[in-house]
Image (cartoon, rainbow, N blue to C red; front, top):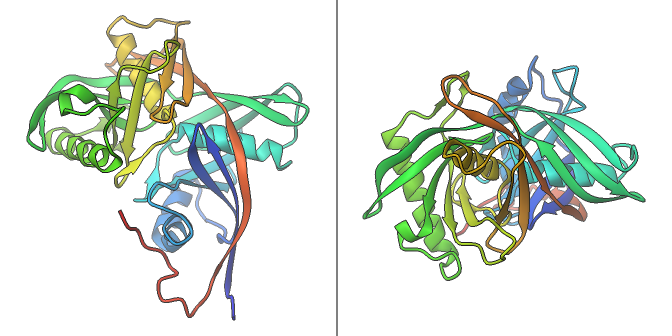
Length: 334
């Protein structure tokens, strides 16, 4: 067997959501900025994303990350996040899983009980702080870019249901809708029902509204739908499932989605600086958010949030490509 391409990865997860970190096999990405390098990845190497995230090496809900040199002097790494449908502007579970993997594999030096790593992402600079105990990362918290609600109670028709949604930014754009409005219970709904409902809401909002960040026109376009419900644990504030990208389901509570939810509650006077918010996923894992400060975004009131959770390394892999494998470049089945 002649293997002409070999890719190395570190696999990890945060609160149940996977992250595949590509450590070898991607050519140098030229460009003056991180967004330039992401665009180079999209234009010239997108087959690598499909090969590593799609079947038979991955699955429809696999997430990926590519580390690059940062273009900003105050960052340790640049990071490009990848999904089943393309590339995302920021990823909260990815920051937690990536920070855990970098420290526990020795790629980033253990600096003591609180080790800091700063990332440049397409959405902005993110500082992560890992709680480290004898080389083990017990938890990671990160300070997110400012989150805000753009529209409250937007009326849409999703499928055959008329519902109202909030549209908010937490590093990516989300439509937020109660599950009961869609006729769904997060405890009983099957994954395909959640995907169909989430994508119907996403497309309806995209058709009804131009979603563009008021300070950065490149941060545009709906990323996902957050379907909410009552929590199972008495210690949680909310339960949710996020359907994102091309119909993927987030197993974690979704870090950027948690920021978006907190921005909506802050705008409604339900959360203030210093308050915490415990967001629960459909697999009962949690992220804990805290509002650090108020931070208006253009004409919209906004907040800076700190999101905390835990992750773990799940594997060190080498993937190969057999040139005679007719379907080895990747495919997806739902």
